Length: 300
Image 1 (cartoon, rainbow, N blue to C red):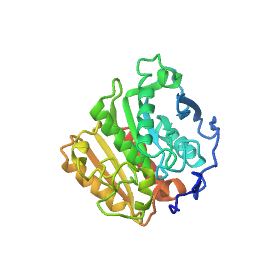
Image 2 (cartoon, rainbow, N blue to C red; image 1 turned 90 degrees about the vertical axis):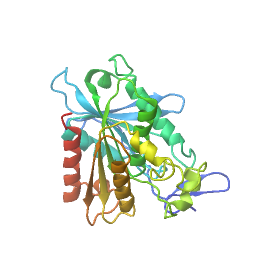
Image 3 (cartoon, rainbow, N blue to C red; image 1 turned 60 degrees about the horizontal axis):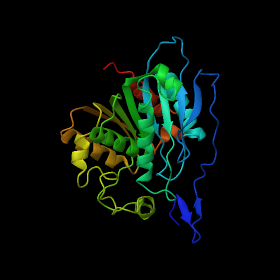
Image 4 (cartoon, rainbow, N blue to C red; image 1 turned 45 degrees about the vertical axis):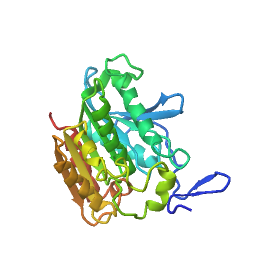
């Protein structure tokens, strides 16, 4: 039993303790005018993205593009859950951006680095629309690829970081990642913690927290930090979150890494991990939303 996430039986069956089976279909939201739809980006692995677009008043309008990676300890949740559908609908409406919410295969059935590879495949699929003749009409017509942002929460923030690193190392033709939003990012430290029992099932090919993909402050992490493919990073931490200190450590390491960009960190005192998703009506979640909106609408 890998509490609080899942149990693996001898016959290979996986039982998840945190229910994440509640999914909602894409919609045309009557309150905000935001439309959403699901599009397959990997036929081979049966993976889709959920796209969100705000109400378009100018047919020629180009909007910032936000690529979002959901959280859930690499093993629960999806872009199709009500939690993430509602959050992205609200964010797209308030920020007036196009969003691509990425599905990736989850551990323990599909351990890391599979989620990283799936997420990179999704980004490359997004990039295939740069010339206006790609497979997705919303991106062809309305996405401003010169104003692309990566974002995620918890494990999804870890994925966003790794995608910014991969873009810096491998390049990403036609797509300019100008910023990254990391909400309560999951990063490992140098010592075992509450997540340690799960890591051998979620990322079995590495030693606990030695890999810079899990621990950017570990061996080789400084070089990866310096290669981030963006110029602005916004980090959110929560005062009662066990990952708070690692968020601050990432912030300090990024400033010292030689990366040529601007990083900001914002703390919500007295709040728990991903409170903005579980309690979006609270004042702190509202303030956090306003900061993300401002960040994605920054004139570069």
